[in-house]
Image 1 (cartoon, rainbow, N blue to C red):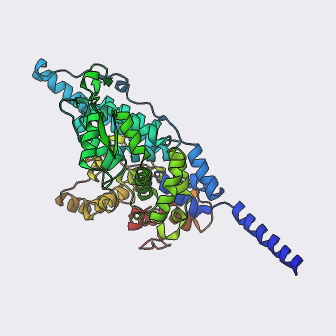
Image 2 (spheres, one colour):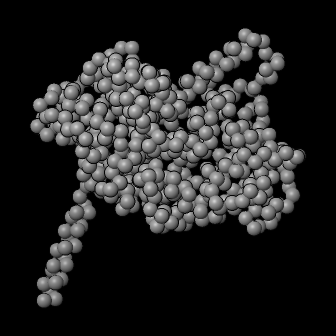
Image 3 (cartoon, rainbow, N blue to C red):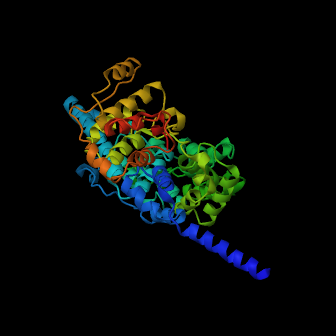
Length: 477
């Protein structure tokens, strides 16, 4: 009997090992890549399908970058010192304003291009996440060069260490301008950064007092700017070196020491874990899992890759109940269509314009809280706009003029290309092989769940694909 049990145990272990050795398959590969990128291609999905879940996660993390693959605009390397308005003529003011508008547009187009062509979509997804977390915006910073520098900072630390990123972003010139740290001095400490670093960047509401904010604001005084170079410049005469009391501790704290106090608090790791959970797993975090993963995050000394590894390997991430529960942001939606259909790349100026119409203007989050995201991305107007774009970019038919008219009357508007796009449907279908099951594979590529309205299999390929693109499920990931 013991021998038989032993043989049975060995058989079961062999079966389990065989299952574990198998790849995750098409469905799970699509899920992993759709959540961590901008619309996976069929080739990418097939490549990851042969890997196990954990190996797929490791491949993603190993391929991350610290620099963009797309060259930035030439002007991004040169910081133009601000000039006093009173010293400029009317023509000079207009020229500076027009130059700045052109540079802002070029900056958005550069990043949209990088999102489409990057060899590491996860890097850009994380850079976008941190842009919506550590918010700065062009309308106040008024310097495309400084916003470009901040973008490179976020990318360099996107999957590095959160503690290093927090210290760096606190001294970033764009952030110092956006939250008024550059003008904060001992005589008049500005509380904006102190408040937001606690409420939004680390602890979250309920874990600090108004006194903590006031005392932290004193500690952050003196971090200012070299206006000629656009770099951090510490001004000792502006810094309040007096004794301060924060979170029950007394000392002559400076800004870096305040940030370290925030990092010591366990709620900081939990807050970041919750926010990344909502970005990559589901709208409602599992608090038991949040605590477990956050503890590992702190033990790793705030390594973001460690946190992402825990999230992406969690049972909740792979659970059927969390499939198709997140809504694509405008940038994800627009970039994903181009990547998945392998169409002639859309002019990034056009993509930026449409993204703004859909509610997401890069480098210009609406408030210091970033974009609300989630269900706010979709309403009757934006869904109609998205469907109009899907129709036109896949060339199933002429633009839906009636849908566009309704959208414009509702206060929106849709920007469509002036010339037809090049979506070679027959060549695109061939990537799925010569069998009759290509339609099922297309559904696996484009949708996270079965479509609400199943297109008839008798439809021509272009109409079948368009039916999936226009299905509401296509807006989910």
